[in-house]
Length: 53
View (cartoon, rainbow, N blue to C red):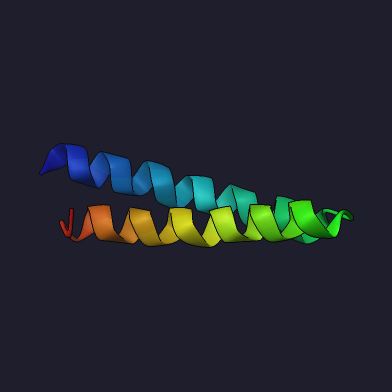
């Protein structure tokens, strides 16, 4: 249980930091990859927090 919460918080923070990097990126392909990774990381973080894994 505690590991899921820790992993969830780590993934959620990672997603929070990736989003501004993706928004600032000029290259369109890198922009989509960073924004997609941010959204995926946030979703995985929420799933870990609520014990869906």
